Image (cartoon, rainbow, N blue to C red; front, side, top):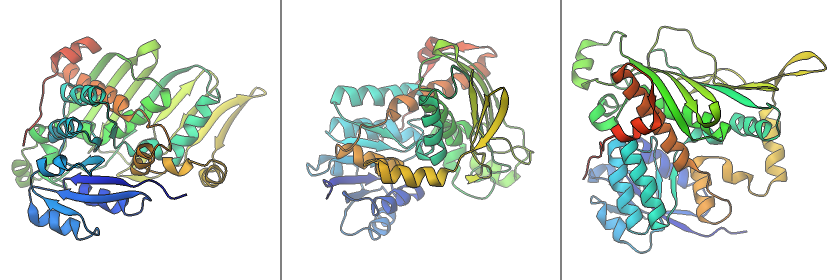
Length: 377
């Protein structure tokens, strides 16, 4: 069946914006009709890869068009809130890159605006669509873990700091533009994955420590203005007493770390380890049957093939952008990525506040202390 056309305007044509444009070209029903960037040359180059979009340098122009259904915001973190809220108020649904924003204050403003405007807000959280996440969710929903009481969110790079280690731009290394470092760049993926699997976004208390101790090339350090963390450590108590610990490294002298995990009264799941975006292990399920401890591997490919054969809308969960388009077409309900991303930001900002205060902080304190970091264009 031919799917309804969803007309999209993409704002921001850097590395991520170009990836989004390329992804839309392979999604049935997605039609990019406008591309916008303050760098007109970059916008035209990006538009040249897609048939027929209009090119703009002022975001207000595509927002004023009545033939655009949805806007895709691909800018740096502290630009997310102003652009997203403007798009929502212009009557557009919004797909926004992670993290949702640079602060909890700005993130909540985005979520509130979406509800007030009656529009969908979707945040790019790619880990939710991985095969191992789907398998873990199925095991949890089938009760195979029993009562869940703890989860671990792990992320690792050996020496993978943006710009100072030879890739990416200095925008990632400055609190002014990014809001934070490893925690907001990588940690949001892994924390959000855990919150999604736990089915819990209620945060009670947070303890955190942020570290920057690894050596850097002196010239690149000076040029980058590096003032964010390269290692984030934390411990979170969620509603109902479930706990979550966090280890997120842009740079650390280890040969690797284990993948994230979830444990319950009847079983546990260990997810693959992602090292610099590469998967280095398999998902495993651990339980006891007939008084025998079992460690099981899961055939994700066979699972994926069967589910695509048996489930009419399984393709709607193959990627974040495919899910977004399918939800706008009315094929599936949109996953609560905005609420998950908001809770992830509350946890992240809680780590920053706890580190600054030298103590555990509660959710009300975190929310009350949060300030806007939004950069308006």
